[in-house]
Length: 172
Image (tube, rainbow, N blue to C red; front, side, top):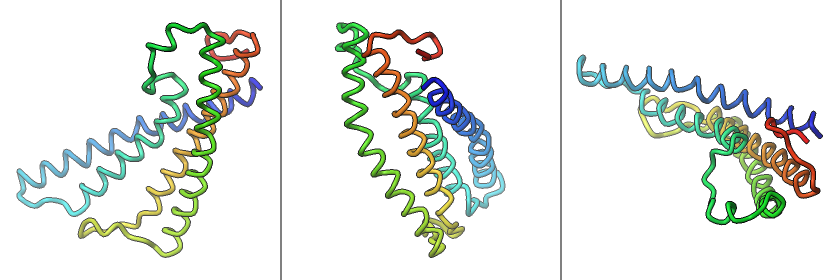
């Protein structure tokens, strides 16, 4: 199980790293747009679309890593009152309820991205009008990674529920 968890978390960490690096093209696009619009007086055709697509990619690629490091919103009011095994039980129930929804979402997003690729769907939001299958694919990958990370968190919670302790790296 440790190999599976480590593999999933390596993918999650890598995707989160890619998401973090994407802040640089986002900054570049926004600075270029501001300069073009206010200094040169000619706004770009592409900066709006690039900025929302890159920002979406940052969120999609980072959400599984946020779960891995425990940065999603949680209600500590309840969890601070419970012991480790009871917290693990609550997490197991939550993950078991969340996982089928995620699997369905990943399945639907895969079809959505494929269909957009097949018909060469375009955004229609600007004069640039780029194809949208790349961002739809990032949505699919992001939610797929989140589903995998939920599986890893579920396994870790089941280990705690069975009375075994996890070390600082989340290994049993």
